[in-house]
Length: 90
Image (cartoon, rainbow, N blue to C red):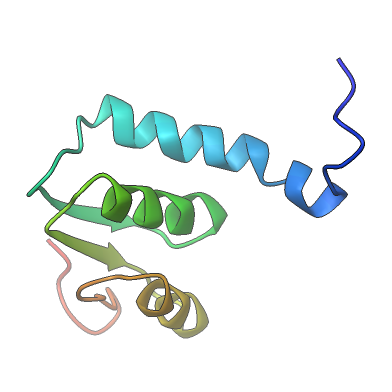
C-alpha cells in the first residue's frame, strides 16, 4: 500500500521505530504512576521515553553512555539520566 502523498519521507521513516516503541510500552504494561528505566537512547529509546511519559509514568530514567543522547533524553522529558560508564546502572 503506498503512503499518503501528504506524508513526508522524514515522517515515514519514523513510523517503524514508533511502532516498536509503542509495542514496548504496551507489552511492558506501562501505566499511570509507573517508574520506568530505559536502556539505550537511540531512536526507539527516545520514542519509548516520550510514550512512557504520555502513558503517565511518574518517573522515566534512561541509561545511556553517549552524552549527546543523554542530552536528548533530558530534552524529551527524562526525569533522571544515568551514565553507565560513571556509575553502576543496576
